[in-house]
Image 1 (cartoon, one colour):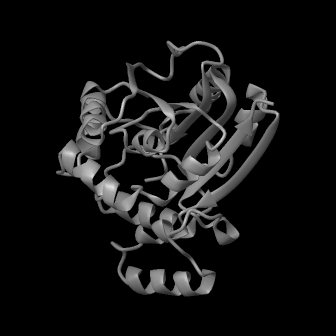
Image 2 (tube, one colour; image 1 turned 180 degrees about the horizontal axis):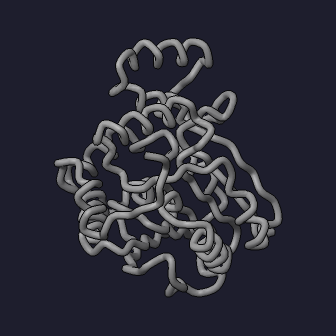
Length: 251
């Protein structure tokens, strides 16, 4: 089965995102580790000059919680009431305040023009077609005062692509019709970005997708040693990171 665009309902996404932990347990883990995934640190760095952020497709709220702990005023936008309820509980457990907005991001956002310094999204745009991506990116740049950051699975990451291919064919893939991208630059240009940077991060996370394959552990070890892969949020060598990061400035 080739990569095919299909999506899950709001309730199905909420179920997929569940980890078995309650919000208090997730909050305790964040206090201990300081972040949930390597790219959480990247968001903090890329928003160093920002006071306010908007998270499109915020899921359980972990990324925004990291930013809130770093002093950002955060707005979380998601279409799942259950996800937003979890996010509120997570914020409460951490003593944080935020704004929580239920909305379909494929439609005009109920947010003012230039109302946030940074608009970002992580692991969402891979579920939309080209027309939808163009429309959402345009809206993101309307709302953003300084920059937009979009993070999607990286089509150039060998480990991730092989693992995804195998899990889809063995019925083990649970993340919907995820379509990775080689670049999002054309959408940023059309939305009017003044300058664009693009790179990949989380290379070690990419090869974790090889685990279900026969001989996957050995292949992962070879790739790790050959490419000097790390869990860090620095740019990956040869663009082998799991996440493609596209950043566009308003000015």
